[in-house]
Image 1 (cartoon, one colour):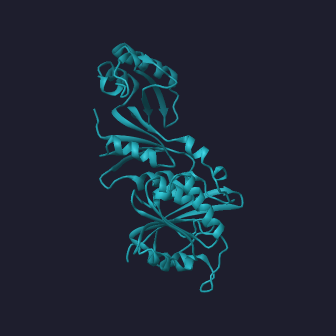
Image 2 (cartoon, rainbow, N blue to C red):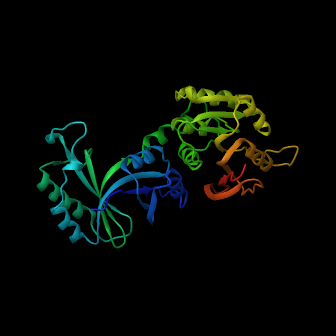
Image 3 (cartoon, one colour):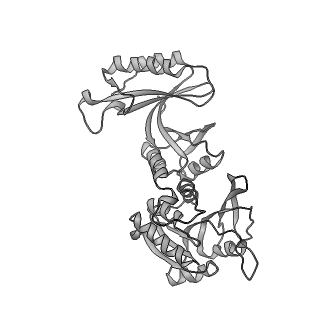
Length: 348
């Protein structure tokens, strides 16, 4: 049996962004072994890390403990007839086996003429005969997943699924304070993850608006610093964070000109922040250079060495003092494409 391998199913909403979000959330010792369409196999990773990534992710849908791999269905059936299932179907909340149940689901990563229902029935029968456990297709204690790739099949256990309800129920127009043009929470969470901030790190948004990035950063345990030149946005951001019970995460949210971010952090006795994630207002101008690039370049003085600046822009921007690591186009509608920029402060 192959051990220490986790499979991740990524969203198909964007081509590259979900993969890079996953990559950003992995530890240095985790190894990406295989990428086929929207399925990624990672080795040298434990199940707790896999669950944590799903809980944090925006565009990472599910993760599976990959129990073993075979080349075809006959080999899979033979192996299952000799497989011990007890470790994977014990209900953690109730040790009475009569209340334990399971389901089998097929996930076809590549186009296949194989009938999923036939496989699910066959494997379900094997497991039921070996364990005497009941089948529950609606809310199983354990979900076994048969993942079909090109020339191989993984048999796995579902570890965790993304909370789809959160991103539906927390859309910007449903918050305590709303202003048009907000980035949706799923993309905001992804951008925060790409900045590689972690619990206890300081996340800074110098154009905080209604607080979307600060909310997502606070929900993963970051300390929060925000500013906006518009006092209504500052007050709205504070109101939204309070509604999410995130006041304890706030270091400061204040009306401030983004040109003076270094002065702002000095007031707070903060040398450098760990990450900056923002959505600058389009069409902004400064007296020194005439566009947003001057302000964004200025943010280097606020960012720790090897820290990330992640922002959205309707145009591709080049910054003189930071290294562009990634650039992702996000189609909004026919007259607007946002480009997600990922800049690294490689030297201080």
